[in-house]
Image (spheres, helix red, strand yellow):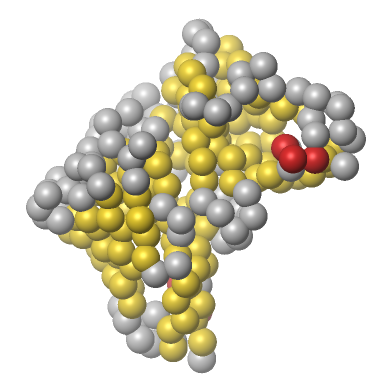
Amino acid sequence: SQELEQSPQSLIVQEGKNLTINCTSSKTLYGLYWYKQKYGEGLIFLMMLQKGGEEKSHEKITAKLDEKKQQSSLHITASQPSHAGIYLCGADHFGNEKLTFGTGTRLTIIP
Amino acid sequence: GAVVSQHPSRVICKSGTSVKIECRSLDFQATTMFWYRQFPKQSLMLMATSNEGSKATYEQGVEKDKFLINHASLTLSTLTVTSAHPEDSSFYICSARDDGTFDGAGGTPLHFGNGTRLTVT
């Protein structure tokens, strides 16, 4: 099976601070997706990465995929309460959009 | 942007009854849709791939006779949980692949519904 590890499992960050979430695959990825989920709700698409070394940014969130296409990081700058939620990485190993998800990172932002 | 409508959002049913969940792409065609299940405080697990006009393909360990999938049109896939039992209580969520989106074009070919919370009593 394709293993996908996400860390940390939970994160408590003071508002205004930066944070990073990591996602590591044991196999080379075709694509890597980042989503945000509020518990028991749908997934909000954040970013999709496909090329080795690729980096994408949207507002205060930046996602990177390493050159070997096995590890991705999600970085939030100057965190805000609206960033709180569960962040999930989804790995597409074969280019067929059948995603294997990480265990998720529960992000809490404190004042 | 592309929207996937999933209905119902919540359903409570009695043990032994069947429940149908719809996943509909509202402004795009989707030859392929995916069904996931999420248990409390766990991640999403792929259950099956729904293909328009052909049989669904199920992941290992998922009972195809228990979770019936029908993808009769390019915009609709349904998941029927047959003879539901309390252990089937879960959050079910679908995703649809936009047939008209090219990979790496800046967006995503995948769009998720808002999920269905099933409670079997």
